[in-house]
Image (cartoon, rainbow, N blue to C red; front, side, top):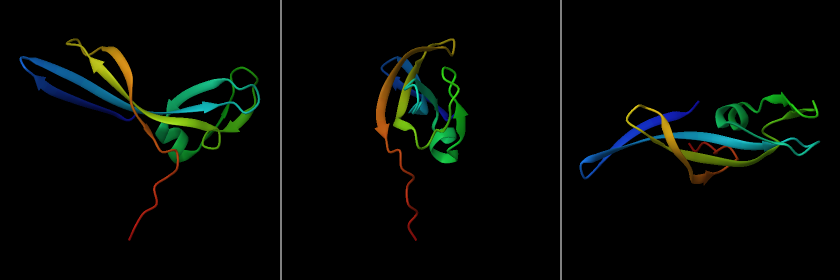
Length: 97
């Protein structure tokens, strides 16, 4: 998982956050949606089997969205809220020389 933990002082309170880069994928056969870590979907492009219809498909080709989730973390280190921080590109960045 791509998790980054960050804390910011807001007055006297410390706000703790973690981020998770995930991709949303859809089975091309039965249209069921899944969410998985983007390194697995966008970077590796692994094949998975749908848990509903048992069709094997490529996650990279079936990705519908890639998002950065922001998680608010409480004092016990537990996630208490999640929100979409931003949408990310599904295509791999081209390296420049």
